[in-house]
Length: 88
Image (cartoon, rainbow, N blue to C red; front, side):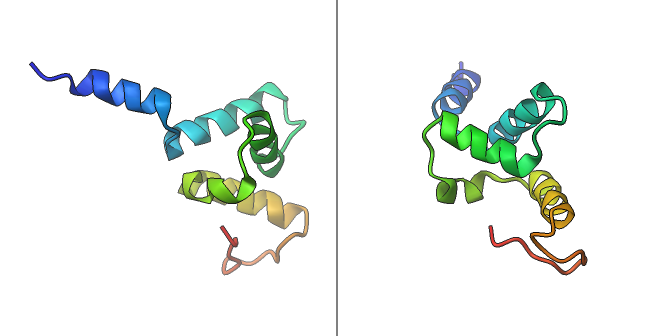
């Protein structure tokens, strides 16, 4: 009998995955009722968990990256073009 589900659950508890990171960020945004955007939520998460911002780029999923891109465009951090690329 395989312990794969138990091993997967243990690994997910011990290590951050892109899916888990995205869920955490979504929860921060939801719990602040629109008071935080996705960029701010990533910063809050990193501060709360004592994580360097530079180290989370690999944890940002494509959907989360798109939401961050939209926030960056709205705040004029980057041009509003379809070719704009985030440096993460």
